[in-house]
Image (cartoon, rainbow, N blue to C red):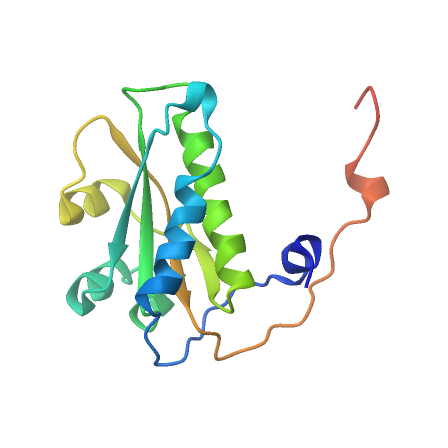
Length: 163
């Protein structure tokens, strides 16, 4: 499958097989994040890989993030605001999206999670001051195959030279 096909076929996965992700596959996913571009090559990110069942249970207390419990891995992406206040969050988001795309290419599903209370996550995971929790992303082998969702047309979302 071409890279474009990987991107176009990716879906958010909320149901996972009870199967661990092998370390070599996880390393490739993390490497995709590490290799992401960043402003001035600052690389203002830190990724916390959550495998502990008790921590996953605590992270899954929101209304829309229950599936963290079932995912073999959840990665918490943190941005160092001290290194680049203007670009750290954007750069970390790019790195996380690299991981999501790499995972899908390797047969691993994922889902972006914005349903969390940042202060609680920071306390639970010992995230230092000056760092922002950008997102949580669950990863695992898909136990579902969501269909394509309707998207706006290019004509609705693209203009040239002016809005």
